[in-house]
Image 1 (cartoon, rainbow, N blue to C red):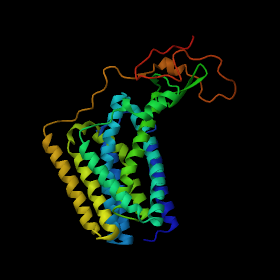
Image 2: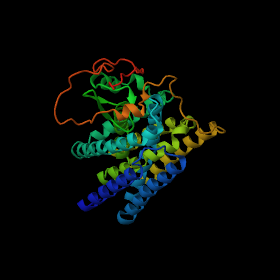
Image 3: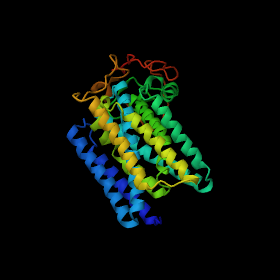
Length: 363
């Protein structure tokens, strides 16, 4: 598959344009409703499917099917990512109107990290053919582990990334609107929103470690790998607001995703030396596995409506009052160093996720 350089720039231009449109449409913090989430989900899905149709028309059915196989894999694995985000947001009681900003930056970071992973994977496969064996074994092992742990969920409080962040980064104890950093009494502090963003980015990287080898199992074309990833990821924010309250209904989805990983791992293993499974067959198997998992989940939970995940009785962070926000100092100070410490914050020891009283600046 020969892809000219201008096509790469054209795709990047479309992605950046859509991100700019999305950012402009959500420039003011507000709660994303079901209708808005459904509308944006249709836009992103139409964009991804339309691009796949363009690939099919320009480069033929085989590459079109490879794109759609990769797109379906990434989109389905992204649903599990969405459920992890829901757990994180509910645990930290992130105000609904602030969630879109975190997810926007989280998706932007995911695009960058996945682009780097894809480039590294393509270089490894080109220069070391035996890497395919490693990828295949990793996918089968990941699928097996997912089956064994299908009833377990992320525990944000035990996250090593969060513990390291809280240990080394001085934090405020309250959300201050959409701010990630604030300055109070001359001290630069991270808001809880920045801690949540860091945890979101870490989970994105972890999911990329699983998904990138999986898509290389259905196509070895870097252009298709990147575009299928990008167009699947772009719709994650809208998908979150559409599905976050339905986590309890997809009880068999993780099992289905595990079987998909095992299947593509086996496909990759056979592809190396033994037998190439046609893309049409691979795409059909993936669709059947996922369709069965979703149908079985909805049947097992029929009659249940939308239900948000429970939040802690005592949220780990509070929301700053308008007076506290108005009293904040500019984050960027041109000169001068702080002459006093904020007695309400301890930059080095913050062992527990509990709300602590914040001292008010002097009147």
